[in-house]
Length: 433
Length: 161
Image 1 (cartoon, rainbow over the protein chains, first blue to last red):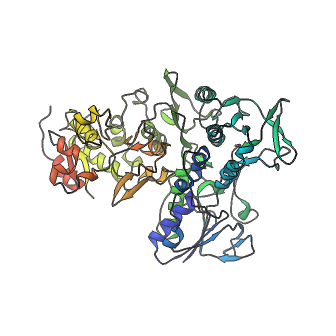
Image 2 (image 1 turned 180 degrees about the vertical axis):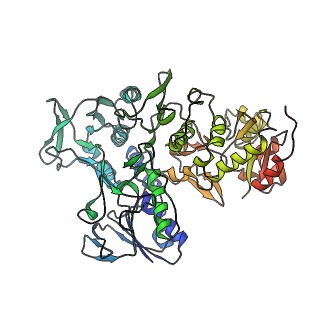
Image 3 (image 1 turned 90 degrees about the vertical axis):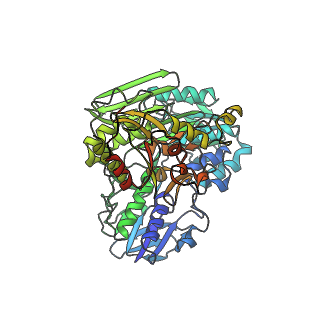
């Protein structure tokens, strides 16, 4: 069996390791347009900030390909997939044939449609090469503008600030982290960043990047000019659809996958940021470009590629980050613009502690925990399983809340908790009663 | 693989397991020494009230562990069935805290995720002494072994407190 995996990050690595474990003799070919793709993408901000040296951001050892007997095509881009011919074409014209194909080729930063993006000193913040080029430029950088106040933008801002750069974050939305949290939590982070010397300007869209060959500043739509020798664009990502555009492979914002992480073509699978999977909270397909989803989708796709039936329950939005000393975890319908809920429960016991539960009927559909995150995983599992929390919801935000309080709920809805660990607990409860 | 289970009926919530766990994971492995050295040992096990009695809860070392999937550094990994954190590699992003459905991972102040590691330094000890929490439990509510053996324990009648 000949398997080709396009992409060598979270989803690709997870798939390759699964394939090798399940089938010691199959052929595995991996294609990546990065020369050394085995680093962890979310860690480039730690590298930029100087918190981790380069060798600490690697997710797998350099002998990963040899050890797993993988034929690696690195620094090569897959430009086209030909589903009828079962063939992938690379940017150097090389043609590779497959029995099974996994699209794990990720996403790329979205750039606004403004003039001047081609100037030296304008970056997306996605690849190790972005971080390296930014670091190489730092001696000439006094001021930086980060366009976008999402996770990527803020991580870049904090990293640059740690390097002594004067940073302004310019955000189109009225609040920071608007995809991940609501206005209240966004304001907590604005205050936190400002306390640490990062300037935040909300409701500000860029009109033009200024400078000759090199960036000298950003002209905002308001007419204001922000001086900068470095600009980071953190305006979200878009699935890398190029290889499948115009083919029979079905895509929307991402490549559509079913519960086997398979596309509409039986021997083509997709996983990670390029894929659009069933979102268990939204009840429809959605792109959740997140590390944990990529790893799980990669594994499920690989199991099916190896002929072992495996089912993917679906994805949901979720994220965790800590800026300075303040952690936040959110999941489900937690962002500023989410409206598809009936009620919310809010607790704000201190200036830097904020908890919000979002409900549709008696079902949890999202939450935000700022400052006190210990119970995030328990609450997230309730969102994921879609069970009624009617009898429990008033206790969920208490500091004393713990897993034991959801045991009766698990006992009553065993079919929603099929994993061995839950089933053992259910049996334990039955035997004790 | 041997795991630790809790008979909720037998657990008195005395907290001996929590303390023993914290001490086992302190550098001196001695409560008074640890306190004198200014170290605040962190427990990886917590006792919680439950309808059947009390639950002494720690990492379940899940068969399919969502914390391992969620880890962006590879710090969370499995060795012979045991789910472990490589503290050198952990950066404190708390993706594992977000993933764990049992709330069994502690985000520590040192920006390192802490969880049950099944007492690697007690390897070689026999019976109840093998794990600090099990050894400390005065009512034998904590049990180390296979689930099938634990079930037999649950079938015994116990005196309700």
